[in-house]
Image 1: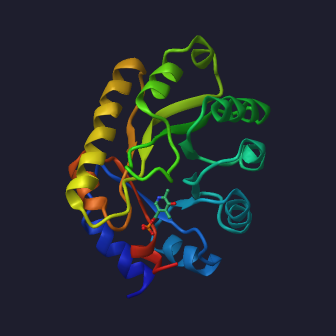
Image 2 (image 1 turned 60 degrees about the vertical axis):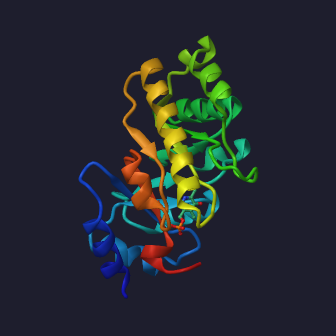
Length: 216
Ligand SMILES: *Cc1c(COP(=O)(O)O)cnc(C)c1O
């Protein structure tokens, strides 16, 4: 199957309320162009250097989403163009994004990453850390970031019940967050293997790589 066909098939399964991020990490420019030519405009990358190279080479109406773990000292390389940072998992990182956004005279949209998986290899905040950020005065004073919602990754497992349980826990935290902060509209959950469950559990943004571009 071609990239264009894969995209078409996936889009046919997505409700209008769900945004598709085409996860193009490790894939060559030619693959992104193929997706671009059939209308895909949102791409997700997990390495800042790779994303920046692709941003330089590809049309400027593409929206670039950073979906990977972000090191504080690298925020500056994407601060001028990144559209959404999914993996904000510390207050320190959020403050650095704010600082770099200010230097670039813009507001950068962010998602707070929540740790929902039972495996402890995945990054993210727990509920207490999330609430302590949202309730802090320092946070409220950050003028160059905008929190749009939450992001999470379920455990990599065939156990669908476990995955659903993790998605439900993220959705319920999202509901709590919407009572603390206005303007939230994004719940980023679901990848190639679990996005249909994620949508049933309330996802508004899915990050799909291998089902579009093939395995990595
Ligand atoms: C790689 C990646 C994806 C896409 O995974 P696929 O299984 O290829 O769809 C989604 N989210 C994050 C955070 C990733 O790193």
